[in-house]
Image (cartoon, rainbow, N blue to C red; front, top):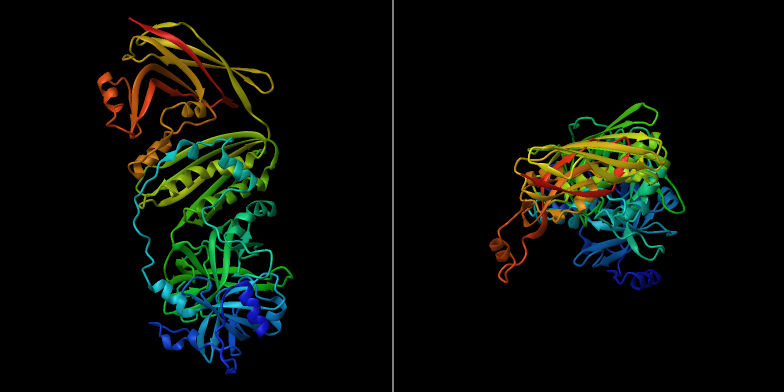
Length: 623
C-alpha cells in the first residue's frame, strides 16, 4: 500500500484518503434503474470510501447483457481530474478484466458498493500491467448537468470570412496542412502519453464501416487527438431507422451505449457504457466524449461482438442498435442523454461518376456540429472517391455541391481540380470549405437541411495557361459589340481559342477602359475587398454564391477611378469631397479604397480543361 501511495504522489500529485479500518463488502447485483427523480441516498458518497473496500462493477463483454466484475478500492484522488473534483482509484479483479486490463468501451461502467452506486469507470493507465482504473463519482456526473440547462444559447455574432476560406487555393497553408495531416479540427483532448505514469480518460473506440483502411489511417491522428481510437466496424452498422420507443430495460446501468456520428452507407460510431438511468435521463462515460458542451448527437443501444484483448490496448468491438434518444450534454464528467429525444442530423448524398462512366450514389446522415461535420464530410468524400478512383497519378476531379439551409437560399459551389498528386485530397478539402464557413459563421439561426455532392472523375490531367488576347478594335462606342479572342495553351502544347463577345454598356463613361480576361481565382484575389462581413445569414449565403470559380475564365471591363468598399458594397467614382472626408483624421476603418471600378463582368462557360492566368488590354470609348 505504501508503494502505491508513493507512486501516486510521485506521478499524480494527488493524496489518498485513508482509514485504518478496512471494510469488506461482498459483491451485490446492480439495482434496477430508478424511474423518476434521482434519490441521492442510493448513491455511495465519496467521503465514505475506504481503502480495501470491495465493490462490483458491470459492463458488457459479449452480447447485450451486463456482467459483473469485482473491484478493490485503493483510495481517493483529491482534485482529480479537475479542482473541486475527486476520483476513486481502484483495481479491477476477475479473470476477464485481468486478461484484458482496463479496455476501451468500458468507460461509464457502473461500480456499486453495498448496493449503492459509487460512479463510473472512466480512467486508466496506458500500458499498465495491472487493471488499475479511476472512477468518476456519480454525484459529480449528475451535478455537472444539473447546474444549468443543456440548451444551446442563442448566438448571432458573425465573423468576417476571408475569400481564401471559401475559394479553394492549392497553395494555401490550410490545404498544405490538410495534405500533411496536420489540419486542426477545433476540438482536441490531450493525447495519451507514451508512459504509463499518468491516469488518462479511457479512449473511446470508434467503429468505422464503409471506409477503406488507407482513408481511416489518413484521419486517425485527428480522431486520436479527440480521444477516439479508430477500429474496423463489423456488419450491422448504424442505419437510418426511426426512433425506437423505450421501456424500463432500455439503456439500463452497464448496458452498451452507442453514439453514431455517421450512419447509412458509411458508419462511424463511438461506444461506451451507461452509468445511471433516472427515468428518461441517461448518464454515461464518466469523462467527456468530445467536450462539446451542449450537444445534439444520436443515442443508440448497442451489442458487443467481443472484447479484443491486446498488449497495447484492449477494446470493445460493438455493433450499433436502434436509436432511442439523443445526447444533450458532453462535459468533463461524462455525457448526458434523453430517451425519446430526436437529434438533428444532416442528410448527405454523394453521387460519384467514375472515370469508367459508371455512376454510384451513397446516402447517409451525419451529426450537425461545427467541428465534427467538416471533418466527417472530408472523410466520407475521400472514401467515396477512393472506392473507385486512384489516389496517385494524373486525374481531374470536378466537384459540384449544394447545401440546403432552412429559411435561406440554396448555397451552390463548384470546383474542378487537376494534378498528378493529391487530387482526391484536394477535392475532399474543396467540398468541405463552404460548409465549414457556414457552420463557423456565428449565426445562431443556421440549420443545414441537406448536403449533396456530385463528383466526376477523369483519369488525366487537364490544365492550360492563358497565353494572349486579341481584340477586333481598340476604339468603340456605347452599345457596340467588342469581339475578343483568348488564346490558351495546354500542357501538351496544343492551342485553344475562346471567342468572347462583349456588348459595351450604354452608360460606359467615355475614355480609356481596361479589358481584363482572367481565371476566377486571380480575379477574386485582385479585388480590394478580401472577405465578407455579413450582416445576416441571408447576406452571407448570397455573397458566397457570388464567389467566382477558379477553373474558368471571366471577362471584365474596368475603369480607373477612385472609390471605396463599405459593408461589402462597392461605391465607385465618389466625389473628391467624400474621399477627403473618409481620409480625414476623424475617420478610421470601415472602408477600403479602390482604384478601379467594374463596368461589366461575364462568366464564361468552362472549357474542356482548367485555364489559369490573366491578361489585360486597353480600349477607348468614344462618342
